[in-house]
Length: 138
Image (cartoon, rainbow, N blue to C red; front, top):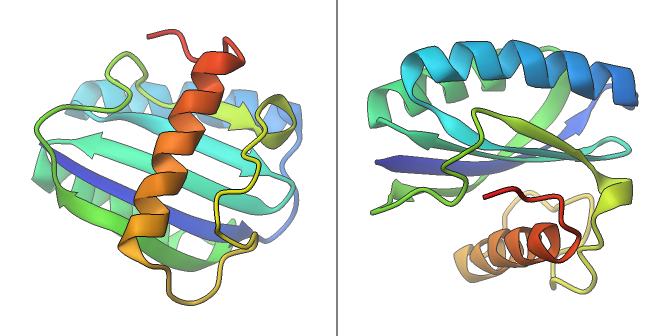
């Protein structure tokens, strides 16, 4: 099992309709290749976690890096994992207005480099806030 978490800046803000459409599109593809994850969007700031078989995750991440809907793609976490953080989501899209990340120690938008500890803390905080907000349906 492999996991990548990245941030990027969207070229333009996504609407709720955009997020719903992307969630349906991404979920269909991800289910077919065994990928799960979360796409968090707050105005133009994007955080995404993708996890699954290493070859599938790496191929998807390469497509993401080339996607013209965003720029400044920054890898925050990239490593093997024993289990998935979001095992039940082929790709859930969450709007930032629904989740309060509070003080994670990371400036938003993110700088060019981020400490692994801070990125891991952000992932944990995001998951905890989704649980608190009853958005996460694991």
